Image (cartoon, rainbow, N blue to C red):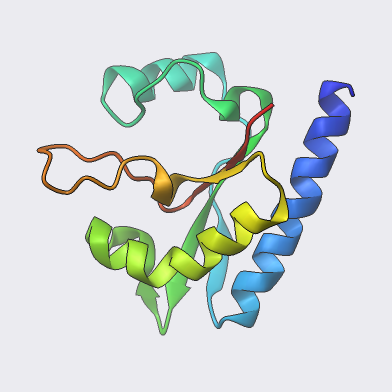
Length: 125
């Protein structure tokens, strides 16, 4: 399967995800899908990303902005955003065994810097 075939399958699931979340009452605006290497380097150097091997670099990850009752869910504290977006993340991961939700990255809130990324949805290849 070519990369473009994998990207097409990812995007089909991404569309299903948006429709599912809308059905739950979320208003959704687009975030970031494809990212340049230069932008990834900036995110890595400033701590906004933990890797230089982001799936955004090959358009196999996307970020969405979630609003619920006019509240910007992405801006809520990590544990609250996790609670609200958990059904969306579970749906995403149910669509394909290679789908990963950023809310499941690192939920150890006892650590000084837990790594969660609730607006992030990716497919590993």
